[in-house]
Image 1 (cartoon, rainbow, N blue to C red):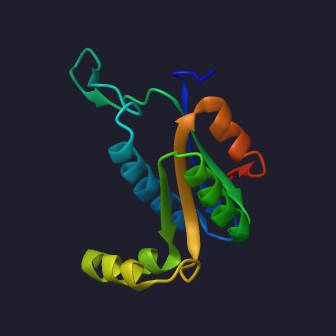
Image 2 (image 1 turned 30 degrees about the vertical axis):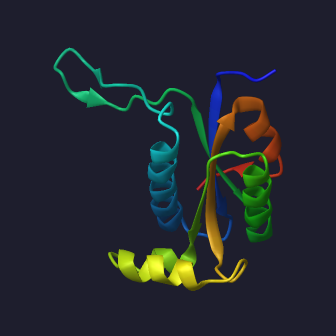
Image 3 (image 1 turned 135 degrees about the horizontal axis):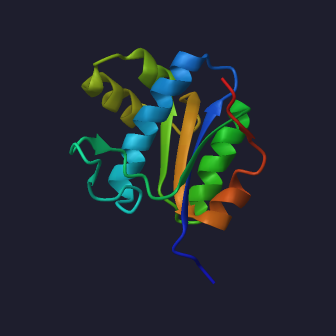
Length: 138
């Protein structure tokens, strides 16, 4: 039985510093939201009409070994879940999207150093796939 309850997990390499984690997490979450439109609700506004984040489901930032990131991505893709990878090389190419896209397109599987993986899907399945990771503590 599947549930309509989703879970979003962003797993990062535990060796990354807090600024790099924040950057990679924001980039990965943005791409996941493009893949799964149920992550965010329509506008959520307060009495002054200020817009608030309309996140519908649990979103966790986790940390673990770099080898576990690759394994998570492979397992999530095998389950058919929306999965996003981000690399240290991508992080170093600030405001150079075309260079990043070209680098990724030319890379053989496993050639790029994955520093973050995002996955979204049925709550219990994502929880099971990410059970080897710890909650990121900064």
